Image (cartoon, rainbow, N blue to C red; front, side, top):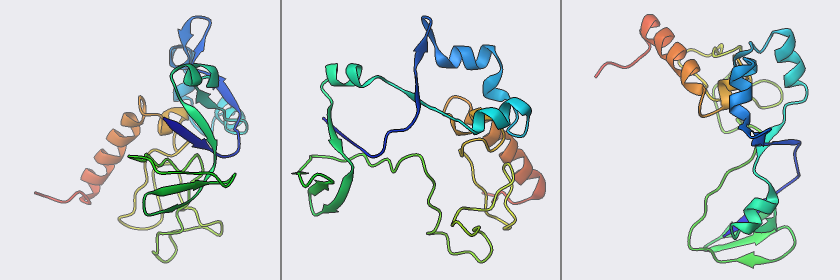
Length: 165
C-alpha cells in the first residue's frame, strides 16, 4: 500500500497516557466546546490533526510517497516524478475545503468557501455539515458529527425543507 501526502500539518497522537484522545476530549468536554467560546477560539487558532504515527504505518506495510500530482488512465504521478499503476485509489483531498465547484450566486465568500454561520448558510436550500468548528470541535469528527446532523435535520423538518417521500 502507498500513501501520498502533501505538506505536514501539526499533529497530536491518537493515544495519550494509555487513553484514546477522544476519551480525553469527551471527558474534558473540549469536543463539545462551542466554536465561539473562549476555549473554542483558542483551540481553533491552533487546531491539530489527530494522527497515527508514521512508524506504526510503516510497520503495517504503508509506503510513503510525495503528493500525488496527476492521474491519467490508470497511472498516478507524484511530485517527485515517480509514478504508480495501482489497482485502486482512495482519494482524500486533505484538510482544506475547496467549494469553488458550487456555482450558486452569493453562496461563496471571496476566498471561494461556502458562507456559513454554524450550520446555516444565507443560501436557501444549501446546507453544509461536517466542517471543522461549525458548532464545536466535534462538528468535523465522525464520532460526534451526528449531534450536528440531528440538529440540522430537525431545523430542516421544522422549516419544511425536507423532501417528502
